[in-house]
Length: 315
Image (cartoon, rainbow, N blue to C red; front, side, top):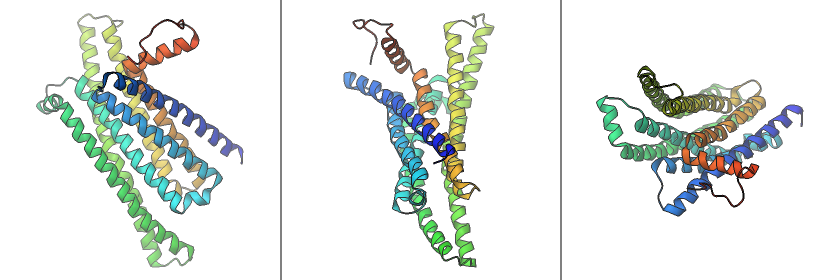
């Protein structure tokens, strides 16, 4: 094992550990809150489900990373590769759509526009979210089904390639496989467009409201103004992380078609693992309940709170 492979495994293990800790924290806080009150808001439900999917996704990616390094032949062929790819595709696609649903929910709840269509959606936000979640589940199943069809072509393509008989039939099957592989990535275009639209509308609305407050004489240090600015920074972080993840997904997906296949796959895997941890950590900072619990936990760990003192844990 060389230096590159060692760095890859260290980065993968570190990001996996951080991602598991962050998402398990979300599960613990929201799960404990639901257990006490038997109630859970729509946003908390989406965040909790998203955290669970990301825990599963991180386990799949870590398994894939170890197979890339220690058993590349197993990774590139056989039933194990198909199981990992199907599991990864479904979990990944559903988690992306849940993050998109969360962005739409924040946009409808926080943004302020007078357009009739926006007001219609805002007044029916719960119904809109239910339909979006059902649609996310169906689209995730659709992307997984297309991957299974891609497997069939891939097996034919590899079988002809193994015979080294480069005929017109071989070229046709290879072209079909490449085309289906490229079309498969288009399943990720709708959540990217919806996320871009919702984040842009939310940033525009918050920015406009912040400017109005400053023009009316409100201090830039006012708590409300500071909250708006903080919300804009969080939303921008969400979007840039999503773009980074989409780029990482493209690198990982097209790794087989790049000159240095193994290196491309390793770079894609490392970048891919950063998103589930980073996005969930920003969710904690942007959610008052999660942030408050996280801060109190840190204070207790550092000894700033006495053992007998009370704090808003799981409240």
